[in-house]
Image (cartoon, rainbow, N blue to C red; front, top):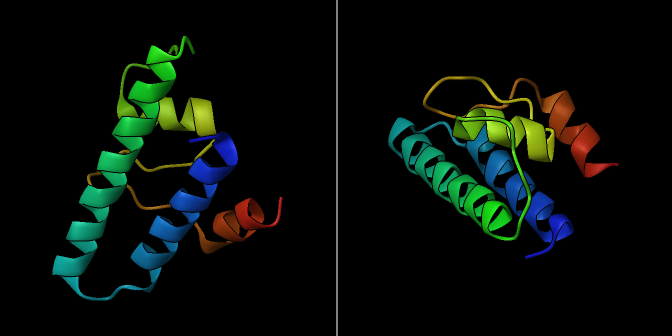
Length: 88
């Protein structure tokens, strides 16, 4: 998966998280985001990309420039960030 495809998938996942009000569904989506993020980071590491960060959150912030909270839901900081990401 190339970087553009990764970015599009994160946008899709985060949009779903923002739009979902049901707590169980939000939890499920958070798990899906976490799982996808873990796969992306592991794939990058195995392809030779060196990340200085130790945690998943820090690695995503470093590699993908994603401004993530350090909480369990992997919430984005603002809808404006998502808009900026989509319109780069």
